[in-house]
Every structure is written in structure tokens, then in C-alpha cells.
Length: 418
Image (cartoon, rainbow, N blue to C red; front, side):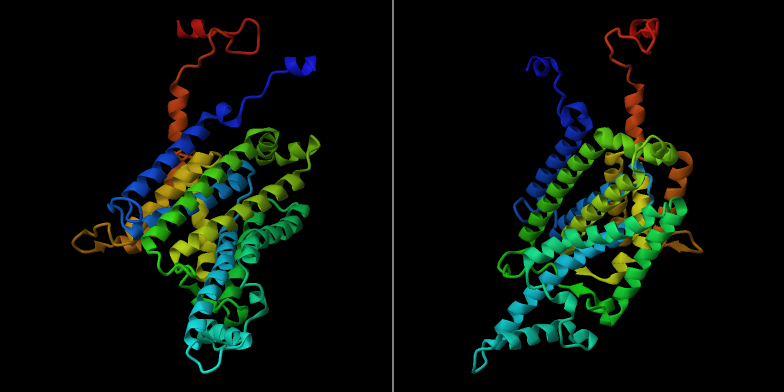
């Protein structure tokens, strides 16, 4: 007991890393500000469509956190994490579409002379959902689509199990570097091509639509629903940031950084490199699935194009522009590029008439994004988040006269300032 009393207590995570409290505080103020200005509960200065855009942006920030954890901290350049994002969206979208269609079918059969049987209701739902691809029966993949708890479990389990199996096969073979990136991209491409087929069970190229219409909540306006999803997205981002900061703060974080910097040396020191990489890959896939489950009810539709490899490449670009290896950098990059993309591709950016040619930003936005990525890589490798590091580095250390080095005669702070 005396030993325990003399042992110094470790300070809380937020106290050791003030940037966490700063981020959570800014996120809380932003959430309150949008709520006050929105149509749902506020004074109506922000439209419902823009609230949805902000909510979707927060979800993209969450998946960017996952990408930064797996790439910026562990050194695994995954070009497939948007596949896990899309799987989470499909999982919740199946329940939303089933439950919504069930209410429509029951209402349409209510006028029949005889009450409809459960089989007639089921057949009517299947015809409504799959008639667009020429089918009238539920595929096996929809066997639990009627259950919200099971579909919510699928949001976490399906991306997690897929990442676990893929990661186990890849990491045990010690596939690293560009070869691993190609494998993750191949996995994403294979999944996307499969979902494009009408017999995939997920309506092929048509995807799942009408996801913004929550079953049984027709009386609640979209302005209110959009704010609720915005709150949920903000809460998920705050919690995700806190969990990711906890993961990278202790010994575990030091090990995955060591794996990123020198995998062979980390293995030589006795660490199970494959186990650490597998955990990070699976954990971040689950985060991506949760982000997708919150994103697509706000987007209203999901189709296989959302899982195409280009989406995962965009995700890597966001993290690089924001500054990989910094959690707040990933959030800044995703928010900055996402909102800028909405402005350019939404027709709000004015076209530039050069006389012989007119630059239309809807067509030139992707080129501008690519050039920005190249510029950041060449001239600002630490990204936008590196600006905060430069400001912090300019501040003189506050060591109260302690040595600035490990030796007894090391330069002291007072001598350095003289």
C-alpha cells in the first residue's frame, strides 16, 4: 500500500495531450453553432441541404481518421478503406429500404377485401425492391434485412470480418509496400465489379435509394432529421477521435510507429508485427463501416460507384493534404477538400472565361485536386496540419531552467535565451 501511495499517478489522456481537448471543444462549438443557425431547431440561416452536407463531411472526417491511423501511424497505404465505408452504408441501407417498402406495401394492401398474409406482404416487398432488376424474390443476403439490430451488427461485423480475413492472408505472407496497396485496390475493384451485377442481390447499378426517408417518421420534417444525423455524426467523430488518440498515445502507438519507420527492426526486437498490423487494419475497417452507416442516410442513395477504387484514392489524398501522422491533420484535410469539392462541383464556383476557352470547375476540379496533392507532396509534406506544428515549434521551451539535454552539463534554458 505504501508503494502504491508513492507511485505517481498517470495524468489523464486529455491532460497529457491538450490538442484533444482543443479538437473536442471546437467540434462542440461547431455543432452548437450549426444547430442554432439551422432550420430544424434554430433561426434558419443554414439550409437543410447544407446541414446534410456538413453532416456528411463529419462522416468523411471520421473515415479519414481511420485512414490516418492505418497509413499515417502504421505505414499501411490501404487503397480499399472506402470499400468498408460502402459496406457499412449498404448494411444500414438494406434495413432502411426494407422497412420503408414494408410500410408502403402494407398500406397499399390495406384496401384489399381480405387481410394480406405475411407471404403476400413479403412478396410485395420483394417485387417493389427488386422489380427494377427484373426479380421478385429476396436474395439470401436479405434474410435479416427486416431486423434493425442485426443490420446494425452487420455494419460492424461485415467490414471487420472482411478486413480480418484479408489482412490475415496478406500480413502472414509479409506483403508490404506498394504490393499491399495494389492488393487492397484489387479487393476494392473486385467488390465494386461484383456489386455492379444485377444478381449480386443489391440491385446492381441502381443501388439502394430513398435512404433519407426514415420508416415511420414521415411526420417529422427533413430539417429536423438532418440535425439529428448531424448530431450523431459529430458525436461519432468526437468519440472516434478520442479512441484513436488513446490508441496512438501509449506503448501501442509507439510500436505501430516503429513498424511504420522500420518494420524489420520492430520484428527483431520481438514484437509481433503481423498482429499489430492486423489489429489496426481491422479496427480502422470497423470505424470506416460506422462512418458509412451514418453517411448514406444523409446522402439518400448508395451505389457501387461509391466503392470504386478512385474513392479510396481520394481518401488518401485528403489525408496527405491534411497531414498524415496527425489525427487533426486528417480531419482538416477531409473537411477542407470535401467542402471545397462541394463548392466547385455544385456549380457555385464562377467559371473563368479565358477568351478562347472557359474553365468550368465542375470539369476541372479533379485536376485541381491532383495538382494540389502533387504540390503538397513536393513542397509541404507535413500538409495543412504541419502549419500548427510550425507555430508550436517557434515557441520557446518552458523547462524552468532544466537541462536541454541528457548530460549534467547540458545547455539550460536561461543560457539558451541569453
